[in-house]
Length: 557
Image 1 (cartoon, rainbow, N blue to C red):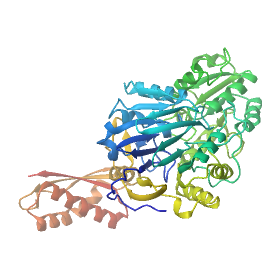
Image 2 (image 1 turned 135 degrees about the vertical axis):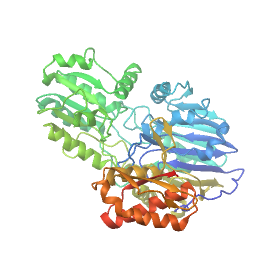
Image 3 (image 1 turned 135 degrees about the horizontal axis):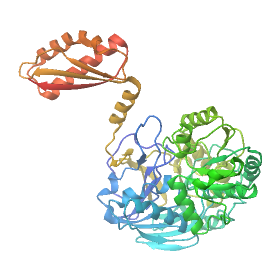
Image 4 (image 1 turned 90 degrees about the horizontal axis):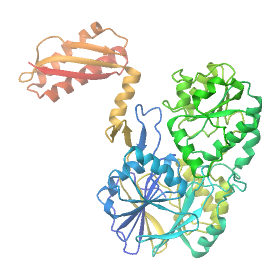
């Protein structure tokens, strides 16, 4: 069940086989991307981003690794998108930058969100709009789309038929029987596909550890209404910019309580405008106004809806908490965090809650009120699906390692043989041949960091340097060296940043550097800088028990 630990040479794919490669979403919440290969053609299912954690300073988003498909982009039949969340569509612009003509397939709302993102990249995509129940040929891939319920409208599962067998990918889904938009997960279609025969089932694992069934969105309405009925001053709601269902509940509560609403943040304004124009969001006339108009209203009639519920440092809510935003949170304001706590974001979210509380706000979140439900199927729903689909092979997706393992255990309990359940990590390669799926190798699936306008420039090593700078400071060492002899012409100069010691405290290290250089000569400049860096680093660690970033600058005499 566990793939090889490092990248391996792949065997040739059987002519009648289907290859499945996971480039994200295994062992992490985000960066979802799966590539299918059949008869020399490729199909990409989702292309999302992963949001950085605290140990990745300066990174905007993290992309899937396109290395394995980069020299075969002309063979990509299409990019199929299951729904419009960033962890499933955020990487599309970066992939299309490499080949803009790849068709992008998705539902109406999903494609609208993608098109808006692509405008920023000046890419005009070739799109194919599909709806639940439609079946289309994408080159060698026969694709059928199935309605699934999630925390965003228009979610789709996709069934891919090939001679190797049928693959069914659920995307993100749950089985809410009372969804706000009335669009339930089409279990009849799942059962029909199961009767036809599902050779490989890729299932959402996020809530596999949670027993029972996920709570209906409608059950949140009383808690949200209570917040609006009891809040004495302004209400600031933070949610994902694509969470249309939750925003609809907030708008309804604001309308009922006589409040006006303003959207704050570019992505929130853009996405809610798209959802409204396409009919997925109902906004009563006069309810939503410009932010500046709220200044003329009493606080008890004001509602703001913004991004930043995960503690993202550049999002509107975090800037409000840091007093770095035009909206000034104050005593008596109520902040409603209307989204889940994504694994890995805990520290940032609790720091955000503390910051808002320090300013006098009452922070309402999932820890103290029923103001959010998950968009993912819990264990009871997953078992239900396994029993009606009856897949021959299972590959849990979308989850951290513990979620994947829990999902695998559920599949096994429903009768899927242990050796037909494939649990792995990003880069895992699975071949489906003659009805049996097996792990055959591993391909590169590194984190590709987006740092401002730079894609892939930041590395794990450079991030380690950033962490060292933040935690330990930096010491720049300047020396004049005669490279031919290794002679240090004069004492070293030290420039200290973020390190408590005075530069004069470092003069004792010069003799050690002088001796080491002389013994090693003749030298290249790179050699000399390495000696200076290593010698000074060891001396600082021994003397001060600290490990700052040491930056050597060697000038040839």
